[in-house]
Length: 167
Image 1: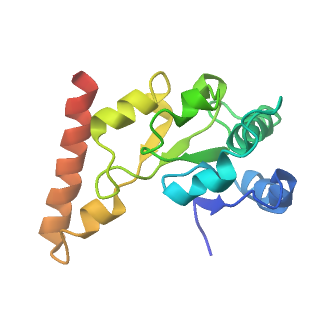
Image 2: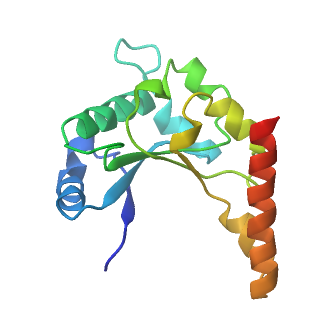
């Protein structure tokens, strides 16, 4: 299958992703590694270890992805992206995670149907907004099956995001 990127789960250890990371980089493709997801159940894994010196599992995954990108030769952002949900609220702060040093794209589910607003996105991702790819699958798809209605829903989401940027 030819794709631009693939989403990977690092919960067998970050290095378990090595074949996919290497293959993606060799083919000028990307990956998105689950780090701090929008589903509430994710906390039971991603927040574990918060009181330890290395930090929570999510913080360790983000550090590994940052190191992965630093080891690659790319003009801008590296090929290893992260999945960080728009609904994580204060979790980044609470877990001591600073995305400011992350050097890759951030896929952010949770906008719209899952409850995050455009203002939430700008608050959660303050300082790294240009790296964020906002996902609104259910919010757009629920307008279907009309192609015109789908296009209008996508445009409404875009307008909402742009309006919040200026707020």
